[in-house]
Length: 89
Image (tube, rainbow, N blue to C red; front, side, top):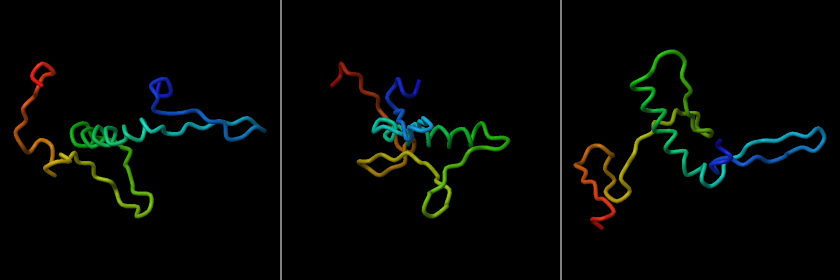
């Protein structure tokens, strides 16, 4: 399913024996922040048992995901939000 949706690409890395790997596409890399946020939500509200953690590969520190508005720098959920429908644009 992830390959069909364009998030992963299947690549052959060995002919003898034939072996393949799955690598992230550009769309998959762009989707990573969404996965981080879902993981953070799950740890906070559905935690229990052993959970996967995301670590910075260079420093070994755990990555703590937070969504931030690129324009204001404010953490999402801390400021009032107004939803604008396509008809209102």
